[in-house]
Image (tube, rainbow, N blue to C red; front, side):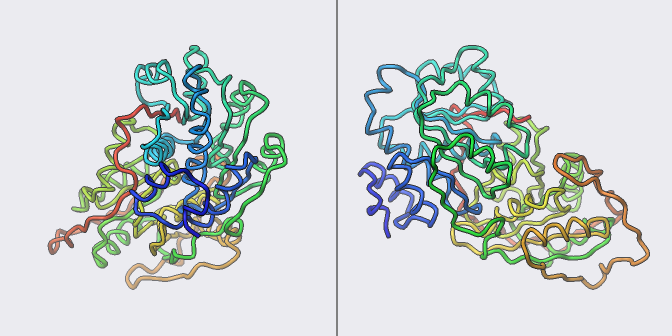
Length: 434
């Protein structure tokens, strides 16, 4: 099947061709016809499978066929809710990329940036509004956003929004929307909570699922390295040096741990940057762009970045610390193995994290290959320390060891990589992250 078989208008096909695509992904091939038919949709697909285009393309088609309506009322007609600023930027850039030959207007609003440009964009009128719940409610409170004309609602990464505690904000927003509307729910996984939300929101929805529940992409090779907590940093440095890795996404549980690890790596002559919620939006965007452009080798991130980083050929994801929520492991490693590229996901697991590892393997329904590096064998005399487990739990960051990397041979030259949508920070984008 090609995109020409989906009934999309010529302007959209032109934009798709500009991006070098001619064949839809499975989620796009299944979802787009239902959305074009006006059906409510509950779609599950693992990350990196093209979910975003699966709803932006048909929305652009539907709104463009009724374009005259937007010219008369200047109210948003489609609303896409996302859990993070980064994902709002990504979705908005998808709208702009595929809608560049149409006259529809779009904007994204999120926190961490000034509201002035967002006020201006909303005042001038937009057809498609991409927003995070908190900042959208801020605009509603200041009467700068009118949702009474919404025809299509999209909840993107719905499970993540529930995990992050956005359910009350979502319900407030839904209460302000017209009763008659098309609703689309997209998610990487579907928990019982998200299915409950769907039951109360969607009207006889069509269900689409292109991968088994909680399944990581088959293009990702997964492995676990058992190592003492105090030697994780040294093992990470060894892996980067020995393999000449040029682009590595590393996950920690906490903001403090991300900052500390990035600082240690820089001192060890490995360029690194931290990405987490305490960073300003400008700092977060710079860190992500530097990583995409290979100006930094390692991006150390908390789970806030698991849904917002879109790099087609990201080769390596490292779980420096396992997540407290097992499903977050799937989202983390889903940053690699995208767009048909192979990827590698490595977890550095200390004795404290054995239960977390068992929980992850239970979700995956299979064991992950275990490895030990000579010289980094775990000390069997070290006892496990408790890790507070559960959704939203705070976990004490692991203390780094006292080892330092000695300057060695010149680093492997960096290779350019094909990165996602580029710099979208200059547009009317934004999202509040609580």
